[in-house]
Length: 315
Ligand code: G3I
Image (cartoon, rainbow, N blue to C red; front, side):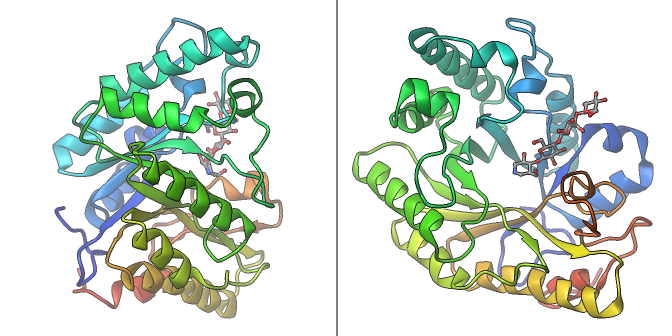
């Protein structure tokens, strides 16, 4: 990887989610993304609801634009996401099992195939578990059964044999029933020879819920299975208003995630879910919380940025 200013001493991909509309409309947004990060994850542009909202009518414009930007700037791309119950077009939800299976296979093969050789890692299956570790009752789980995850991984591997294939989830940062279930799943997939290469830990944290316990141990147990680990969507929500004390606590949370990743050799990526408080999914979903990113609305680095960057040379 090229290594932006956030690159630490020990080489890991340091990435951000990117939204194509801002990349194209805001020169300052683009400049900071280009300067600071060496990996990008399309925030919405590769989701099924974006690329095939109407059956058979594909719109790859946003995804293509981000992949082209990455090529031009020498950045690595994390693909997000092939099989997810959210942002799923209505027409998919209504299909019966046999047809649904064909459609999922075609979708995975079409999308992973289109970007073959251009995606370092794919979030193949996103958010498959409930908090108690049972399978989330999505349309895929209900109609196709447990095997849909192995199927999706095999299809993605056929379409892009060099891409690292991940399952990705939130609230699996620490040791808990959901991360236990994820661990059991990936262990069993590995044992069966299913092409699974990594576990994506989203790391959407909030100062209101405390820091997850056992994060380093959790990352280490996935690595011990022979898998890579990536921090895929890190952010730390602040209950508003922002104060200097809360910014310091946010820096500590980001720093703990960064350190947990850097403590395990196979934790290969640290990606944040956007980089500026100017654009964030948080206030829409969690009213009263916000300011979750490393840079403020004016793209000024916050204390959390300094906390991550102390490992490496300053810009
Ligand atoms: O593009 C339409 C626009 O045309 C319309 O006018 C507008 C009105 O609501 O909606 C726009 O679509 C929105 C889209 O983001 C693009 O901005 C959707 O409503 C909105 O639901 C969607 O939210 C995204 C969310 O995933 C969907 O579940 C967020 O941007 C995105 O940050 C968020 O990302 C997820 C990861 O994929 C998975 N992990 C959790 C993470 C945070 O929720």
